[in-house]
Length: 378
Image (tube, rainbow, N blue to C red):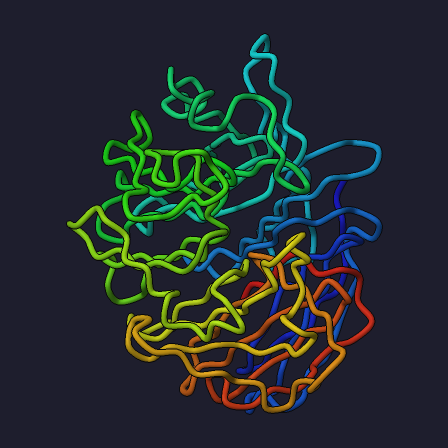
């Protein structure tokens, strides 16, 4: 069924897509990013995992939602988000495979030379591709039917909270056939032939929760990012730290070791600066004991590195100083392309926080939303 709603216009400012457990909201700023307008909801009551605007045409928006009565699906708009239509064939595993998509978790536009191509990652771990702007989806057989798929994904049972997921779908801007994906659990995998075959890419990453702490696969990357301006560099926020990989190397470097010991290097989201490959931000969370997944000691802070992770700076100006037990999910942090870059994060308590100065100071730009799953710049 078509879904229609007004959305705000940024008028030269920034527009954010806010996906929540109860629907989709839009936040739009004035050109100075001082005043913000909230509009919505769309898909009220739907569990929206990811909403992404297509950077290739400035009109298309895709939304991955799990509806109470229809199950997992994808909605698409070709009018900037004013009207959405459900995909005629959403991501689904091959009939008879014994696997069923619980929800579509991650959406990624394809290469700039392939304007209709999108990729989707699901729970349980599956990879799907659309060549018609998200209207119909087909499985990437090179991954979904790979003889090692079951071993890579840890079998069909997984203890990951909210279910196992394929996420962090990255397309090399120089080559549409060069792809990376992250899996929780499973690790990071690479394809150089458009998804026909895949190779684990996890050397150097610890897996402290496994009998062998240095396996070929079975890791738990929470978020993997390609560095803008340097497609030979990848970063990942992992269950066991923060890492950087500089290709053509294939061994990840532990850059979380330089984080303060009292804070640790565990978290979910990671953002890389839109033009500076050496600058990145993470939001650490408490990974001790029962892994509470909240801001350490109830004192939320973003940590920024300006030199590829060799040193980190704590940024908390404007955040509550105590008793703020935030959880920020892996897709719920992003940056715009302004100068200086704006950085934004959303909490599971329904607040959106923004910075106009690359994290030096923060203020709350929206409150009282449902639990936030993802934030993307439109």
